[in-house]
Length: 84
Image (cartoon, rainbow, N blue to C red; front, side, top):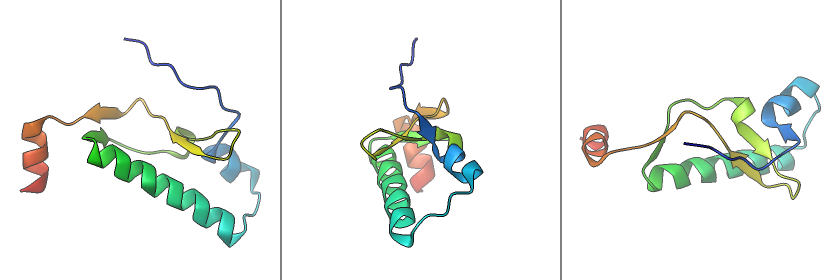
């Protein structure tokens, strides 16, 4: 199996390490996109075992990507266990 990711220049880890201060509006936009991505994964039965700043990538158009080798699809039995 091969995983192909779009080439991006910066990650959230890069931003944190740069100690660049963000406006509240910018920070809110980042958090909103991360939460929307996590909701999308959950709704589509994809589990995220952990999320690190290096897994959050900034595309050139400003949109974020969540890319992690710790993604996995939940089986129907696992979903039942998680919700009961």
